[in-house]
Image (cartoon, rainbow, N blue to C red; front, side):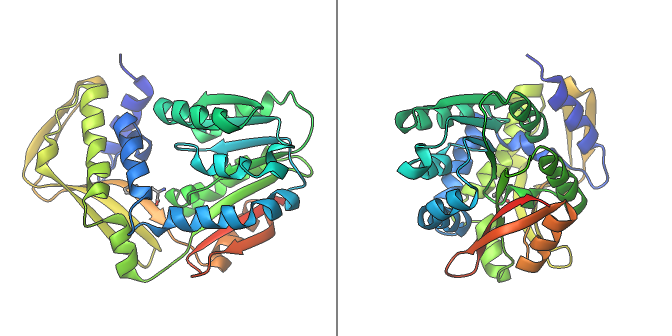
Length: 314
Ligand code: TRP
């Protein structure tokens, strides 16, 4: 079965100079599992910091959001954060419906399964990209009452600045009066910490990045020799982002029949798979404002490495 959308994206990105691949292709079944493993790594503090913030402040967050009836999470992964939020009785008591939007069918299944164990309200899953899924979730609003959109894990950091602004404007457009967005952002930190977070000694992050090629071999009949690539993460201070690349260790020809593509990669040529932008609190507030949002309340973790913001439409 050929995913024409994925094939189209691969064709587009791989033909750019320098070559790229669409980062959503990182999240097939194995990719989602490897990402869950990344979140448990001692060198990847992002998830733990965010979990702690949610644990400590979930009641305050929910009160500031004025007790929404609906929660819509974009990119819930395995659903552990939403489960944590709903484990607070004052939260689960009010929430009637949860919508999950993710490109990974296996992640959606796992998130829904987890939530069902503790949450009695309705759970609706949308196997879609953020924009399409949010539009659908917001338009099928059958329950009266406020909603809160959750965009956690610093997933906003995977957009460049114009992309993040456009994306957040779209989110903002779906927010009515009294609705809120809960968004997490990873903050700028020392380079060696960022380096380890995106290139860990166990090689889990490398496996996660390399699995993108395996995924394309399976989904599109591509002929990437996975063993002939290495993972590379670089901190680009000027752009304030970590860049993830796959480096071709030798010259090689790769066919991607489903994308109608045959390419020759030079030795040491790189394919750029993902960027993770890191913000200062000021820069993040500026981004929100540019997108028509305004911060209602912010929470920093104890080490000042991560930021959680509850925002509303201005
Ligand atoms: N949203 C995650 C982040 O930016 C995604 C991620 C973590 C990632 N590690 C990665 C993407 C390694 C590509 C390669 O932190």
